[in-house]
Image (cartoon, rainbow, N blue to C red; front, side, top):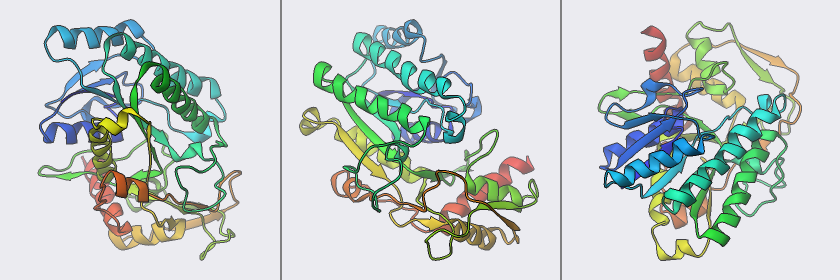
Length: 337
């Protein structure tokens, strides 16, 4: 299949584009490179630098593909800003980039593109969970602008399906981690500027790039007092995107929107992640306890039973040490170069 991958110069999008290419598909990556990196685009994958807000540019990409006799069969949409904390300081850029620009993409799809789309959503659409593990039919009440910006897109997809027949799958995932392993070793991993995600921050301590890791609160109602979160390996996540794309080809997918949670299913505490990194890296990794951060729920864990049952998804990296091991390989490679 010929597939347009928006945000494919990022951590998750680049991993999925690489998987598509390895399985014989023909992905094209579209990214404005504001946060993505050109080197994360697989070498054998076509690349277009453009912004989703530019409807004319996006329509031109679809038109050119048709003119060349290779129209797109589907779109995988990853392009977005992802920092929840930043979204509460600068909400306007999140609604512009995550919501308004996605609307521009949808308009271009209706004008010139395919009628199948897999959307990179988030567990942030749930907000404070009423129960865990979280089911797909749980209440949707985001507690930050990032989650709200993604939920608005899901709501648009519901109407576009009802009115225009746009088939879509929304994948709500939790904390993505690790690095994909292949015949060339690990070629991409998780890194943000500034860094805010737990596993890269911990590994920065192991590498000597930070003095210690901060633990925000050790008095939560959990076994060790620290927050519990759900971690999913980026390769398992990539597999799920391809399975969702296949599911959209079925006749049943034309009758309803597909929505799936993607996570490990059991969750790990902050202390458990730190201990895992200590085992994997062999470093002490000093930790400091700080006060809780406002709005941090004690436990966020997904139920992925629906994806396992309906998509026949089979996560390969179910052990935390395996997830951290691959991330550590990539971090050493990146910062020793």
